[in-house]
Length: 204
Image 1 (cartoon, helix red, strand yellow):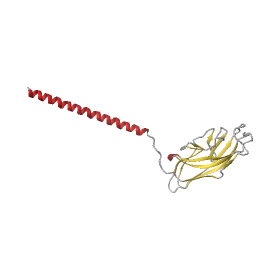
Image 2 (cartoon, rainbow, N blue to C red):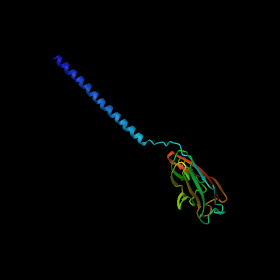
Image 3 (spheres, rainbow, N blue to C red):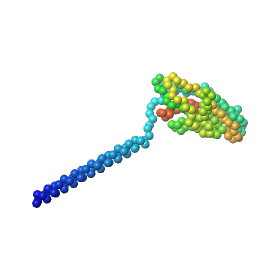
Image 4 (cartoon, helix red, strand yellow):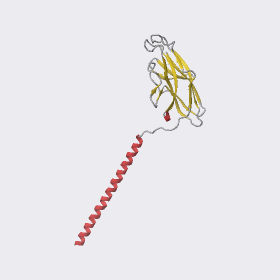
């Protein structure tokens, strides 16, 4: 009888240990699965940092001054729409690198730096790119997403007209006889968050 009781107790102990082991295994597996799912989700929401070296671009205006001294009257008004156009040339001078998805803009998306002085960044100012008779605004009562050039391989270049129009405006819109020499165009390589700045001046 004692022998039977001993065997029964042994079987209970072994069964308990097996049950605990199976339970611990499944708990561990579930924990690992939840951890792996959590890590996968974290990776999905972590932003990717753009890395790389920008292609070397030569960016220049043929004339860097937009002269609107005759446009703006003494009281700061503008009697009628007047446009001043100059030519911007962008050339890829890099030996090997292609400039990808190039834009011409009046603000720098990487730094949020704006290209117009606040005195002339008003609703009567219109800044545009013209290529082959097609016009795209880069400032029109606010900054736009710019003009898309596309890829520039080594040796490629693009030539565009950059114009500034001061529209018919009431008195005190502009300040007469001012020089705004901190204005900038930006030639942007957005894939690597890089922009070349092209300085220009506006006279009123």
